[in-house]
Length: 400
Ligand SMILES: C[S@@+](CC[C@H](N)C(=O)[O-])C[C@H]1O[C@@H](n2cnc3c(N)ncnc32)[C@H](O)[C@@H]1O
Image (cartoon, rainbow, N blue to C red; front, side, top):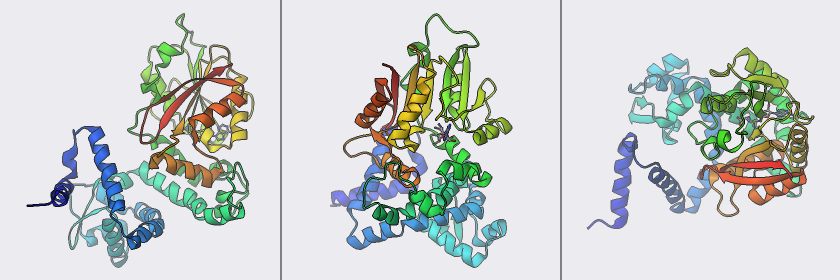
């Protein structure tokens, strides 16, 4: 009789034959399966396998970047039902067939593409992700901007004598990129890098719930007597291309009043030059959040993934700047990862080390957020989590 392990292995292999058949299954169950599978593969590693898995990780992002830049994933993704030969892909991409064969061998070993025969390659779910132009640009952003900072971390942290580098400059980013500039100044003054950063901002939360799912702005924040067309409703501070402003307008089409995007001038110029679809009834304003808030008396000042870029003292400064615009009816909505004290999930923690490497900043726990909000002279009114995997949470703060 088959052991429990054999039966389970056969079931997993059968699922892997046709992963697309999972469509329509309970999302929670699929998540448990994916996470269980990931943990199981690590739990069964011997020490050589652990070393190789961790020690060779640095090839993944650069080689995926090669596949994006050479158009390998895009070529496969353009016709997902077709099986391509090496020669066909070499012709489409211009990559030397001998090199392409080695790249494809690596990609299939990392499940970035599927190999169906000795000379047959097909797109899978990972290829479709990397073959998408915004996702490909995001991958290039990680490889070109984040990776050099990550690689500099051992030297940086040793120099720090392993003290938490709260706001320290030069940080790992500066060492990795050989620059004195703040990461935002460095990236925003390079159009080619800004052109990779903004697509990443647009797609970073695609398919995830949003804070609107746990907080009804219309019912909970806007005064029932209503507002006029000049009332500021929602100010998205550091809102990049304004995806959340657009989401706000879509969610509350009947709400009368202003929706305003604020960001640095280079970003606002981009927004004005090529606005995202749906940006029509939204204002875009260049604003530096280290200066007093220029929009007075809005119902909601919203910051998503903004404060995590900054060390504690700067977060207090930013919140203090926003206070200059607030009235007793205003709230600040801080939409950030709120890390669990125990067993925080990998997607959330990954972002914390990214903040460490790039900004000498961090993701924070609820206690840490409450302390900072209090230091800025605001009161935490509510904390609502809306995803488990990323620990996405909206914190509602108001004047004390
Ligand atoms: C990590 S991005 C978050 C973007 C957006 N809120 C989102 O969730 O997609 C941080 C944003 O803060 C902006 N930013 C950085 N420094 C700023 C400053 N001093 N004043 C205003 N915006 C700033 C950046 O240009 C960037 O768009």
